[in-house]
Image 1: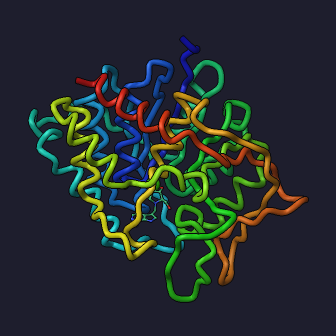
Image 2: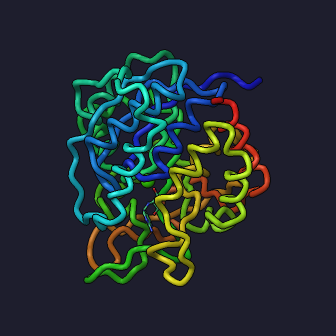
Length: 313
Ligand code: AGV
Ligand code: CA
């Protein structure tokens, strides 16, 4: 049994962000010191509510949930953001009719500063949305850098992007594009960064095979929950950017509990902060180093996801 790591989780209320929270609560080698929600690829109030309900239903301890007051530069499509409402409305999260997990009073970035400073030892930061709250925290309290074990982030892409918007060339990944300056700011820090980029997830798409596995095991409440969450994401196959889902955030999250499911190598890179390629991550010899996930073991990944979901039963 590996040692228990302190993890602070900042997410942006998408389906795979909320599933990631469910997964973290099942990991015996992780202790969540806080959760915060930023309204990027989702909405704030249902994002905080769904987080608290997931903690109530599936957690055996109750980290505080903080709400971000950060705003991005390039908004996500509203159709994607609606997913937060669907998850928050699932019957399994509303059976008790109450919300017990504590809501923090501080805004997300200050809550993260407080939790980092008051937690013994170093904390791993897990971000599955834009880096705005981390950039603001570093500006307000640069001393937190010493309390951060590393940042594990879903963001970027060196081979291609997934943004399909006017006035942009398509080369950026959405979590960078929402606030390119924030990513650029974090790149100037000395924090160790584990980067799960778009190409890191190509071996773990949301396909009919995994949906079938969830259906087969739906007698387990946690596995049924996975299937219901991802039912928000329609399995269309001819509109890559709009409908082909990968386990972007879940792979990022599971790489904390089980580092052996991913392979990493050092890549030097920069973030383009503005212009038509804003949010693009580019490999560059004199750029800052990140530990880029270049390969995964899909069988181990899918088995671990289902194993964690079954534990919650
Ligand atoms: O770019 C991937 C990020 C991940 O953090 N998000 C979804 C994951 O939570 C944005 C995104 C890209 N394509 C999407 C996204 C889509 N088709 N629907 C919803 N969100
Ligand atoms: Ca996300």
